[in-house]
Figure 1 (cartoon, rainbow, N blue to C red):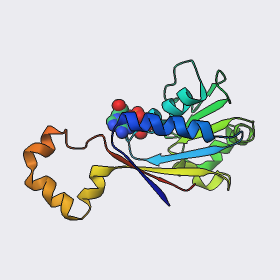
Figure 2: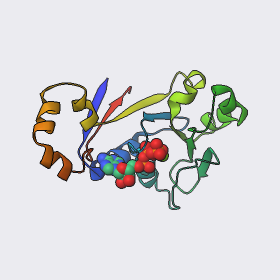
Figure 3: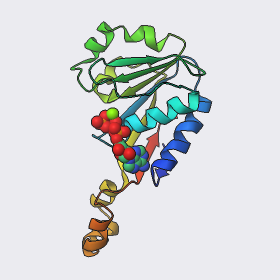
Length: 164
Ligand SMILES: Nc1ncnc2c1ncn2[C@@H]1O[C@H](COP(=O)(O)OP(=O)(O)OP(=O)(O)O)[C@@H](O)[C@H]1O
Ligand SMILES: [Mg+2]
C-alpha cells in the first residue's frame, strides 16, 4: 500500500491539491481515521484543488453536502452518525456515487459494506500514535518528556496509507 508521510497541515494541503488534479467523475474516496486526524481538513484541500469557492464544513448533521462550484461536483459525506450501510443506501448514496462527481466520505469504515469496489481508500493515522505502539521512538519520546510535551504531545505529523 502506498504510504505517505505528511509533516504538517501545509503538506496535507499539497496532497489534497495533487489528489484533486487526479480525481475523475464517479470517483469514490473513503477517508478512514480517528477523531480529529484531519479528514475534514483533507476534504477542504481537495475542494480547494477542485476550485470549489464556497466554504466546506463537515456535514455531521446533514450527512452529505454538495458543492457545485469546482471542476467536478463534490459530494462530501460525514457518516459518523450512521449506524449501518443500509442507512447510507436509504439516503440515496448510489445516486451520488454514480452522479458524475467526486464523493468523499469521512468515517467510511462505518458503511464499508456498501461502498463500490472502485472505492479509493485513505487510512489516516497520527504518526506519533504509530511510534507509541512500538519501536525505539516511543521510548525516546518518553525519555525526552519535556520536548514531547512542548510539541503538544500528538504533533502535526500524519501517515496516510492509500489503496491506489
Ligand atoms: N498534518 C495535518 N493535516 C491536517 N490537519 C492537521 C494536521 N496537523 C494538525 N491538523 C489540525 O488537526 C485538526 C483536524 O481536524 P479535522 O476536523 O480535519 O479532523 P477530522 O478527522 O475531520 O475530525 P472528525 O473525526 O471530528 O471528523 C485541524 O484543527 C487541523 O488544523
Ligand atoms: Mg471531520
